[in-house]
Length: 323
Image 1 (cartoon, rainbow, N blue to C red):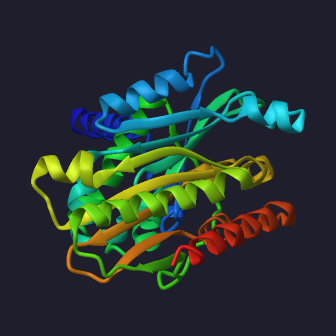
Image 2 (image 1 turned 180 degrees about the vertical axis):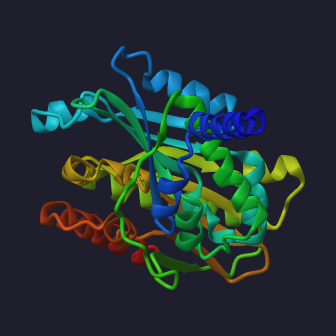
């Protein structure tokens, strides 16, 4: 009898441990293969805020490059909001970013990573959506077995659990996207110059032209990372003359999309890279196209889809005109 009792105690403690860790094996299996994950926690007392979430991410090794309260501009522009809290935030880990870009230059399209933070005002929960390991892998064609990508995904999970105490992953019904699907929007600009100073001048001209075209069309650029100057150079990594990323957002896109698909912030603001590898004759520019949003979230709402394609068309026109 004592042996049976001990077995039951061990089993119970195992169940408690898994529950406290925010992992429900059944939910984890049901969500397997999806690109976006949603982590939620009770928040009736309002103790969890975007500030406490940012602090938890920072303590978990993820630098938050910006956490934008979308409700303020939504209220001013559209006259109402969908949730009491709706934020879009950007975050990254420098060490893993460098390791991944060394192997996969186009990982810049996930640098920084992004998340949406929103309140479910009926259930009194706070929720965060991020990409899964599968989502990151499929988006940039990196094997799911890559140890640095796995470490990044695990770091995100650790941060989620720290940010939302007593939380758990939600059972979601997002589509399983074909691993061969390509979301990339890629462009090149001819580069024949070899003088370092002139290369930097060309970089400045491209950035000025890009920013000058984007802002009048209503695009926001809430984050800019000069990885070559601020990260690679101090580490002695000199494979690139240029490596920068922009975060891109547009209010009249995310507003209708977020109403029915608040988890879209796992993709937004979207990250765009601009890089030139020494010795190459092309500058590479790219970002993840809006099909990444539409297919991975199973979007069917026409207004949001139309706005996404309209914005992508604007960006494409600008980038094609840079050459």
